Image (tube, rainbow, N blue to C red):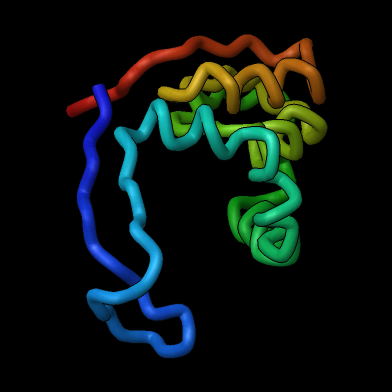
Length: 116
């Protein structure tokens, strides 16, 4: 199901206007499926934050069990796996999971929507 919101963004400023480019907003699964091929490149600047996250959660992770909800392309999932974590990933986007499976096929993943 496509969720479309029509509004216009003026690229020369940070406010909204009504005379520029039309933007579509997609449901999460479709949006991330469309974005999956570029996601890692576009978020590479977050690597230093990820390293800080791993340092924060501790050094002795070997054998711990983790379910990574919203694992996407596996940026943090793979790092945890490499540190000995028994990790599984869940994401709404099948294409994001396909990227993760290509990078690290040993990590079990499932496509799904996780709601509380």
